[in-house]
Length: 524
Image (cartoon, rainbow, N blue to C red; front, side, top):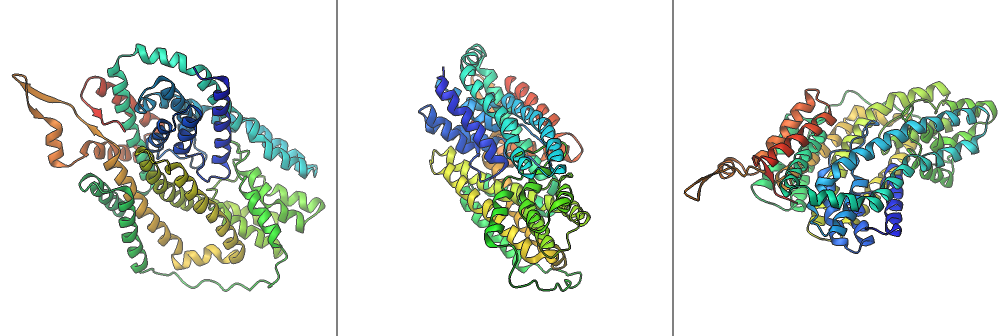
């Protein structure tokens, strides 16, 4: 049984990682890192590393997009890493234990988002009274007492109290059932990958998905080699593709050379923008975070009732990708500086841009860049490479934080002409195509590498195996069942089946088929 000190460290890890996931988003909260650190707490970093890498692949496509809350594996990674380490079980056991824990974690997050609505209304009343400093404190501390606290307590209790009862259950259940759970969990990976693919499923994307699958299933190329190869092809297409323009960007007057917003003030806004989701609420989502980010600019140029009214303009519903929220913030700052930012115009700016940029940001950052980094890092973790968690974290720092600063500066510098120029020149579409190609190919590679579905059905005569169905399937195409499982999930999702229902159906189907010996999976 875990000591109370070990459980406390695991709870603290869950608390801080959830905060980091919502705010800094540097991938310190990757499952690979969480499994590795939990393994250190329990004296077996290798087991924790493999569990974490497995969880990153298992839940690859389940990202929080548009305020949705799919099953969250981070608490599951911490708890299952602790349990398999204590019980001395192989990392594959963690797969069977993770799903119910991940679902519970998602419900805790939903409950916290609802409670944060109360903080949002409190911030409304404080700003109406001009108590801006108190409103800032409420935004910074709200999530610390709900969402992040719930996650920390759940991990603490799960590690401290969970290993004994779970050990008893594990020993009482037939081994065949655990094998069927592993099969079911790998089927769930198909659904996770399908969740990534469903919104971009079109002929050119399907082609590159199949190319990535083929490179993995037929040629068995390493992930890094495939990423370099596909990346080179995508860059070639990107640089040679002709772009049709719809006109010329409007000429925008140059701003004064000496900007009234100092470098230190600009950097302060950037730092505050990293807390965009600190008190994320189910009612208005990122509203308080956006107000908190832009408040230094508002305070510099407005005062009294004017400051209150312009602050209220940023307390209405707002939700977009945290990375591509930065150019909106940058344009908004430029508008304020030039004296054209009326409350109504600021509302319209955010309402008009948050939707399109959410789609671009989710596709590029969560679907493409995050997927590529996670696949490469998790592959390293499954090979026992201790560099894996630091590789994922380092890439997150460079790509996510770097992009947030660059996009904020770009939006601020380009001002009102930013998206108009990109739309005329086809810039957004071309970059989106580039990242989509690479991302789809890497998802195909994951399908052909890490989903090891097969059928163990065989025909025996006189004690000799005379025919294996899987052998016949391999002659047609290696990893055919993994491909069918993923593509079928894409089809069902695009037909309107809910993600949660499909995950449950795949999970139950995997348990039944696995227990009956009709379907099996190669453990990670």
